[in-house]
Amino acid sequence: MQRGVNVLALIKGEERYVFLYDDESADQLLRTMGQYAADPSLSFTWYDAAVMSQRIAKLRSEATDESPRPQFRREKATEQ
Image (cartoon, rainbow, N blue to C red):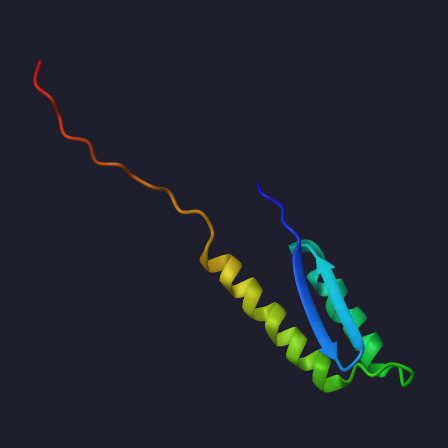
């Protein structure tokens, strides 16, 4: 099984929110974004959290669609 790192970034003026996560930690990232949105000292809003969570859902869906499928190769029979 191949394990990769996903990257999501949000640029708001001078601020940068960059999230690195693997597929197993996506749910934790969603909770973290909720905590950021609830923090009035950050410019990260609930709208930002919603947009980013939709992006995570899309990436999850794409990853599921791209799961490896068995490949069959058809070969011609040769006479000997």
